[in-house]
Image 1 (cartoon, rainbow, N blue to C red):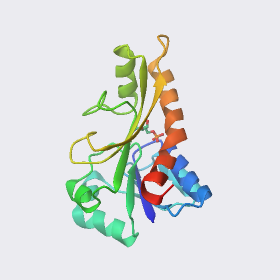
Image 2 (cartoon, rainbow, N blue to C red):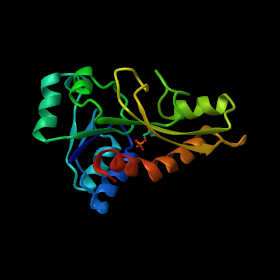
Image 3 (cartoon, protein in one colour):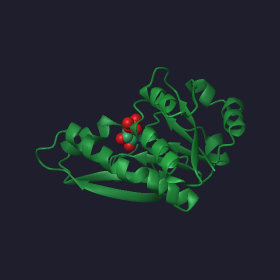
Length: 189
Ligand code: GRF
């Protein structure tokens, strides 16, 4: 089974997932990285690991023929959103129903929804005095951050933690769990 990772920026999750499936001997493999930003670090990471990547504009991503054509020509079965900052078009959600997952860097439903991405999430967590936060891996549905939940993991937030500290802890959780949860969900782990 072939996985496409959609990412917009740094791509540490993408790299972890690519490495996991290269090393694990799972029936899943990462066959494609789709990125909406030219020059994003994720492209360099994919290249280094020998995974094909393509840069697509927002318009191309939202264009049914170019998007589905690309995924079909790469025989993609599963889509993983890992730091992907655009909305997924609904034709894609329909075509890949229950085959698209996202990771969100908080304990949804807390700190989800519009504007809640990346560092903004961790700032909101710190500012509201939360004592814990975490990650949520969920199916992607038409509603932003509201698809069926697959997995959560938590970590504590200390009073002295800055948003950056929290971000580091959350990245640790992502590294620990994301690839494995994808493997278990789609490939029998
Ligand atoms: C991660 O924290 C992910 O949960 C969120 O965006 C961040 C992406 O980091 N959606 P990276 O690009 O994988 O390094």
